[in-house]
Image (cartoon, rainbow, N blue to C red; front, top):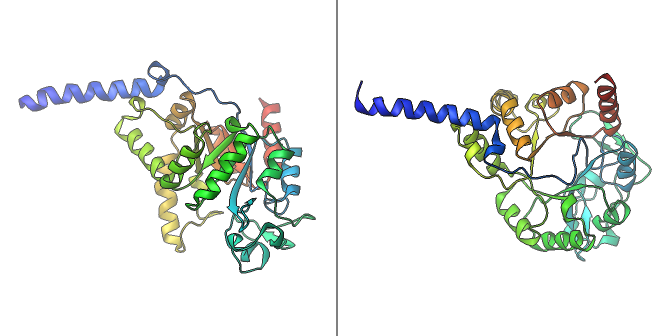
Length: 315
């Protein structure tokens, strides 16, 4: 055996054993963040499978099902009002081919009478309330309800207005910054650093890399929430690519990478809450909670509440 292998193999072996040991006992190196809330049931767009998405009626319906988290997306109107809307362009939601930012709040059109549920293709939601709602209205109506606010574009005015609203309603601890882009998240954190925040896509890949090379137990994690799609919904209710072959490949690879109980348990023990979206079937609820996830985001809060209550009764 060469001198290099003579020293390298024992060192590598010791590193692997130490990494595995600390992966299971992360509190030996890190003090976990104590969350202000534990979201078991999250309502996607306010519960867009049961009422028209992002309307006050949808939020009220989710509250009736004892939701723990409202998942929202925000846009900014021409007159500087923060409204709850997934799309910037209103064509899908309202049939009007205009951007939110090109209209004043009072000019915003009503939602269509029915909207297809994005993560349940072929299913449609209806409701008596067709009005778009201001984020401020939700903060006033549900002052202590945790909410996740996703920012899709690099609109600094929108980010600062949301940060200001959160501060004025004294809800920094229960409002989560969410964004797919790290550049946007950087601006969000600067605008209100007191708010907990989620992993972005690039940070999620970095997390997985650290986990598989064994460095995750040694690295600090500033994020407080890991909100991720459940790989088993790809090619069933979630189609990220236009080609079925790519969706099948994505499903296989992401399932192998993400659905690791040891990873989720490690994050949970370090105070990072793991939430899978957007699950609308009981079999997917079961998979998520059996992996050790903190919670689930769904379009159907009534179905998830029924599942959680039955699961608690069985336990």
